[in-house]
Image (cartoon, rainbow, N blue to C red; front, side, top):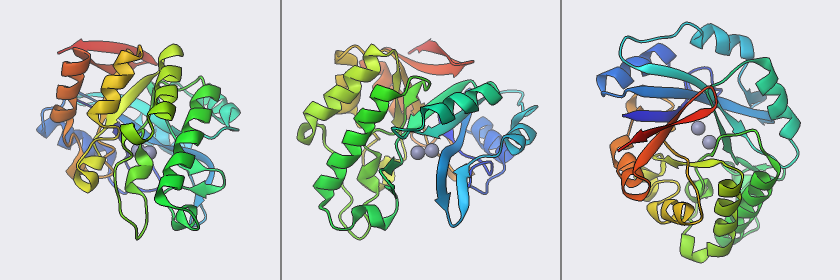
Length: 261
Ligand SMILES: [Zn+2]
Ligand SMILES: [Zn+2]
């Protein structure tokens, strides 16, 4: 099957060798994978910019092939309302098969870090995350799928982690999904929420709604940062794609490939 969201040591927050992840994919019977390393421009973790170095990227991935697994090269770009030109620049530097656009920041805060959650309720934080996501998908045009919609669900520190439910935020989630569909963008089912929250990001309710609103492109990704999670729950997520769309997508050279299920 497929896993179109994973990070190797090219990303600031993984230490795993890309070749080991490819081997894990082969052993688990995956047919096609895509590395999607972090490119969060001007965002820093302990002084390190959360954006891969293009020379390192090329050294690790150019020439990385496998006899059984098709290995694609992508990026997970951190969408911010004012950084469209950074993505344009990145795309001018080399070719990629696939670009995930993900919202990791709201204003000056990284959603994953405690300061974002201070002085506000979890519901307010979820609303701010969704408002920023809508703003970003209205502004950005150069990505292929929106990454892990409802990502903020797994980030509240020292507070109850719970899923952003479609029913509680239907209007704004519909606006996000409608904008994606109208712009020919897709959505991913990110399986990383499964263990922490018991649900994919986003869950099947949101995926079904995307289809109802005209969405046509759907991918599946584990968001693995190590070999243990490569391909995790991919079969289950692809089952949702089969039920809702009848296919799942992979990407080559920024063009979707539709795999009938
Ligand atoms: Zn992400
Ligand atoms: Zn990721």
